[in-house]
Image (cartoon, rainbow, N blue to C red; front, top):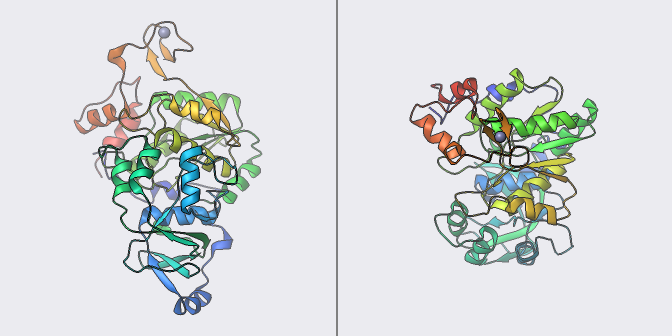
Length: 381
Ligand SMILES: [Zn+2]
């Protein structure tokens, strides 16, 4: 079945030459227990814990903490932080317990009972979650998974700087930006294409990745697996199928595959820009952008992400791709830029269409997905 296949550790154990966590975040138990006794602590959900960790590792640079109201408003209205730097995603912390703190408090953030970060509370505010949802997602419809999720955050938000005390394996143990940049340097890669996905490899995705491999030193495949909506492929399916592709088809020493544990958000163009900024922070020089990146349903025009990313100074080169498909007349993968025949309606098969076929026990055509990749996705756990 598509959901829940295989051994959780299988993909993690096979990545060589790159550390899981930086030395800087080793546990400091004595220090922690002494400080904790004097301080407040707050349990937070995975959505926010992943963000706190990414702030702490520098994956969300220039952010150093959770945003205040002014920063959220600026990002939503102008796609820039108040200091003028491009940033498109509000990164906020919802206080989930009834225990509210006051400005200036130093608190400890816990995930599943484990303290992992310290935060100095700078402001506490009641957000207009409906307003945030409609500006971020460009819709107020509850059928949008991001809108539904945001509206579930009732109560107050806290802003303030975050200091990471330790890495938690339960948050995915992603490499830090420093780990990844060190790996790129050791490999001697000067030009590196970042590839965003939340799906197993489709032949169209493979085509885009091979174009990057033709012209750049390295390819960083960095699937978002932290929090996906019901019905999406799960982390193990995505990572196992990609690792298989990398290990069996791609050249040695030119591809790095590692997961990115953050919430997917499905905010279309604004999420695409957010994902580009993260890959810039991981040391990529280029970012590959296909059709309808980070979209859901029909909420965003298919090339809205191309337009937004091209209009912002993100500090990473954007490489946009038109929709890629198999043309029977050309006998190869093409886009409207490289073929005169046009895309036949009946050949359009989206990832949700592929998921439906797999769930029904049907195999998508070889021109859509490799048979051995399909076998991994349909294999019983
Ligand atoms: Zn053609």
